[in-house]
Image (cartoon, rainbow over all chains, first blue to last red; front, side, top):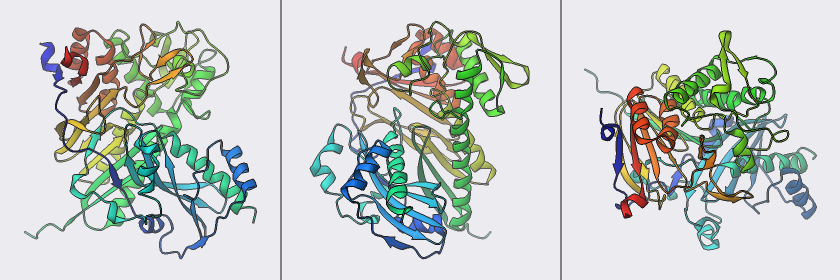
Length: 175
Length: 289
């Protein structure tokens, strides 16, 4: 048995021209609604948070409110939310279904955008997604790759869901 | 022969196991059964998360860390499977893989703190696996299955998809992945510029897991740290290399990345041979030398 047959040292000089996972669209908002609530009609809810409510949510969730990213709908048997969170290296849009009891029924990632090396915090990088409708125009088609690499933490999604639940408790359930 | 109906691909992701878990499945026919198979595969990953999360006080890992020093605890067959595989790899690698490193990861801020400091001289050999799926610690320990359970969860999800009759799928838990069915291309991130891929491999009914530092290094009260820890020196590994391991199952691939990082090359090669696995090392510093 030779070491080399089991331990392969790859050259690292070669940089591929393609970025393996810059933007992935998993599903549209409409697809997520359908998956979570079937054919139910959903009613949009207005989430105009007062400064006091925002402060209470931040305190409750221990996570900073990413202004304006949260959207909510009411279904017959629950609530549907779409939110976005910024991590160290990525921006993730996700959907959450809550039951009428306020418990999480399902979480699905809608879009994943990667920007390694600080781009994520760059206002110009973020600006390109402001007000953008979620959907196919950001799909990068055949170039989407399977990627193996160091584990990317998604603590920020967990924080986002905690914040979303606090928002539900403070701004929706009490009304 | 009738021509095969066109195949549908569905790709979904959920935040689980502290990372993004992606399931991509292809089958002929309507979308609903494919979604149902993916739901069931996510449920299998969620079950592993519930049993083996360090963070969740209700998990079996948390219960072991609280109580297994004082009395033997019976664990679920799945937790048992992972603990037994971890023990085998610790034995084979002479401790280069070790799940008893939770206390350091707590000190360095990668895992939530527990109830007070504990001595840290215990190791994998102090975890006794008794008959009847019971577990006992012989020294104060905090185990963390973060270096092996992601791979196991990927295997569980693949098993569910296979049972559901899916011909072609890929499950990727934050870089630890496994392919079901025909060959699929997988990119390896470049260790110095992980937004780019440096190599591509083709996998067919195989798994690939990668360990590297580029996302997780940080500065803590104890200086610069990473969640990759050399179990023998108990020091954080701060190297620039990336190690990927290809094996038949993802649990082995996941744990073996740590064996390759921390064992002597001869030992690593012997363990890889015993597991019929192969490692790919990208080391920018050696390449520059």
